[in-house]
Length: 111
Image 1 (cartoon, rainbow, N blue to C red):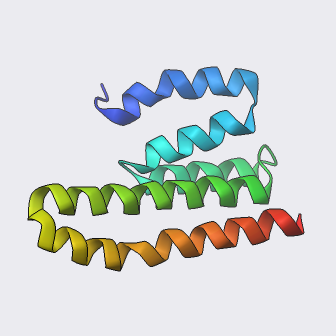
Image 2: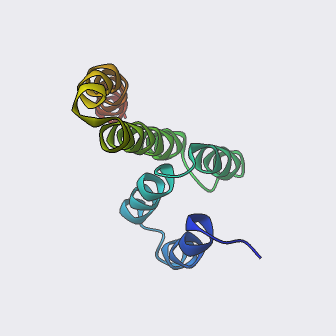
């Protein structure tokens, strides 16, 4: 039996699938990204290949999961490493989420 966050997210994912709401999918991608970006990447790619999910939605879900992952790692470095490491981590981790957010804005403005 699976435990942890992925097991807790499964009922939410089923409920989301029933509603087919993009907002729910994006929220779930962000929350899942806090623990595992690979799962969202693989599932979004599979859904896109099956024509269940558009390429723009798949890219958005993966980017949101990656942003959540980076933010979580930055927060952990602050908590574990203290203020000095936290400041360095904030500087290092600021660019990837900003670049992903800019890419998402460009993607959705072109679509």
